[in-house]
Amino acid sequence: MAEVLMRHALQQQGINAQVVSRGLAAPAGRSPHPFAQATANHFGLPLDPQKRSAPVNLVDFQAATVVLVMDQGHRRDILQRYPQAGGKTFLLRHWNGGHDLADPLHAPETVFREQWPLMQEACTEWATRLLQAGMLAKATPNP
Image 1 (cartoon, helix red, strand yellow):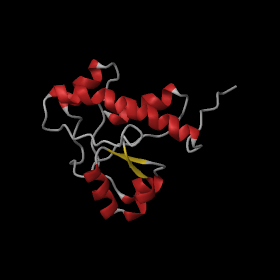
Image 2 (spheres, one colour):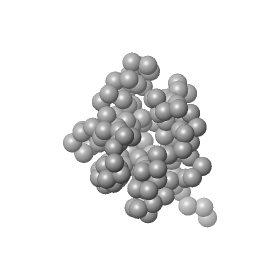
Image 3 (tube, one colour):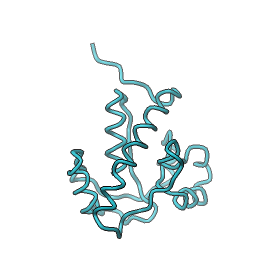
Image 4 (cartoon, one colour):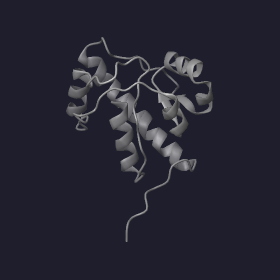
């Protein structure tokens, strides 16, 4: 869900940037959780039906400008496996109180829906901050 929300936040600000979602433990090739799909549809930003999970790897970290994670446990795991990602790995809600967002994988759909606005607010804030910091730029229109 955060991937589609970040894409939307960037698009809303006229920023053309690649957004990639990876997992620490997700099995490769799994489709999005049905509750994540239902939640995204409910809020009008459907997930790509062709989206499949993929494990994170060193190349992802080398290519990334910023790595956003849901909770401190994920951040700790990343830093243990990929210490070179330390300076660019942050909580998704870093600018919104720095609170963790628990993985709702085994939770009811209501938890997914409760997390949507929190993720949306965080993605919007990140897009704004990255633009202000000059780490991302607005797309230039074609003449």
